[in-house]
Length: 366
Image: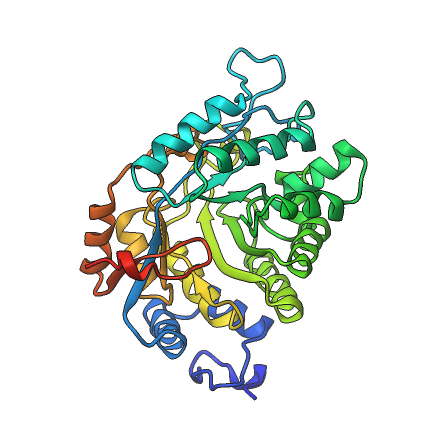
């Protein structure tokens, strides 16, 4: 095994099969290793896991069912207080119309998330799910973040397992890993004090995995966190994946200041090089995660392409509707053909996937 004492700036060994990078090594890679060297190590690790130069993407849509939220995360420019003139909660038929339009344009997945709205109850969630499935039975419903499950359980005054089981009984099999932000309490107290704690977020994922869900895991960096917080976040995810194997992908993105309260303290978005460094670190540290996503959408096209050369094997979604980042001033739109071209120009073969990260062979990108 590689040991911490072996891992010095002048003598950075390649990871061998069976080795794991530990905390001290991860901090060294994140903070001090030359980016080109780190990218090279991550790209080789990616090729060991996925030898073929294929990069996947999904065609999805994200019609937020409400923007009302009482959690008041300081990084969010999207949410509105109850009673605000811009506050909304979509009726099921309105939501269905948006999903139908996206499905007609090729969407295979609907990513369904909203705010922490105390007026929405579990039965409303189930009504949304049933309405979508009735109108678009072929579309994959990928709903409700772990933080939303915690809030719903609190609202209904029932264990979170009951909420998960109710959604599972509706045929849902995947959960988006939103609301993770940074999985340390020091950071969460500063940016999302009323949201699910680190332990709660991880517990929802663990319970979901045992029920039979597959989930993703996210990270939002570039605000008040330190390198130590980022590494701790990755270590928490890796430890849970060791226990359950239920995570399908890791998806990082940078904080977008926009008009959020946190923008008064963090006015500048993290440099794209930081994004590429985190992608590479994730590929090396999250050795039990099958997929690492690099996104053209959350960062930029060049940063997304560099991420593909730094260990990522997935390029995220061709979002046909997105509201949260757009509200923060990050409005990007593209087409399926453009995403394929971006992937090809990075030297890879594009392939459309579903939300289980299975390539749709009948629609394999040419």
